[in-house]
Image (cartoon, rainbow, N blue to C red):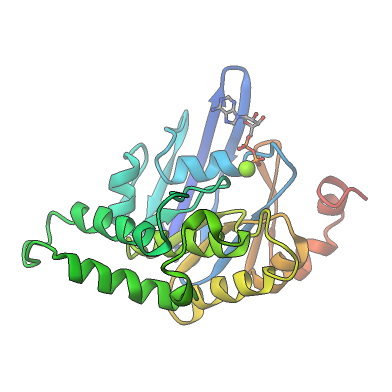
Length: 253
Ligand SMILES: Nc1ncnc2c1ncn2[C@@H]1O[C@H](COP(=O)(O)OP(=O)(O)O)[C@@H](O)[C@H]1O
Ligand SMILES: [Mg+2]
């Protein structure tokens, strides 16, 4: 517990090099449980790479990642996801030619198939999986859309579907890479409401990469600002927008 210091997720001197480029440079990130922690910063700052290191998509060059009481550094994505971290991607990761329900069912089946230690669970029936998928559709506001093909959803509903699919794995921590990217101004509030409900009603911890500063201000308990691979500022959103260095680097002032 000492190495976690009250955080559910912590990175220690996490570094990723791509050849000569240091995409993530000695990052010490601490995420408190049941909070929304935003990662902001200009394009190319290393935000997605940091997510890839935390979720096992990439192996770090050096440094460690701790989740709950475990050192998860270098574990493969399926192992990390089984321990309770799931993510969405900056680019849509849904199956466009399947229905909303089929997409969620696949995510439920994938996560149940992973739970090999769950020896009490009988072979999961079609009906059980469908029930669970409908439950998730309902809590993510997609209940009325379950029969639609995913490709026919609005951008906002596509983002909700990604969150729904991430929820299928019953994560403790959910990592969202730009959940409002491509979403119209009118649809953004329904995404922010859903993200807030992940924390407030579902007890999740949320780490979110987000470009829209008003969304960050409204949602985040804590903001970490990345620039050129490093965290250059961290704190509550109101403090962060007043930080001179942040204004210079991120807000372009
Ligand atoms: N797989 C990769 N191979 C080489 N360079 C990469 C790779 N992924 C990202 N980079 C580089 O690392 C830097 C950080 O990228 P990224 O993490 O995607 O930034 P952000 O998400 O903050 O926009 C960029 O310069 C990018 O070009
Ligand atoms: Mg990115």
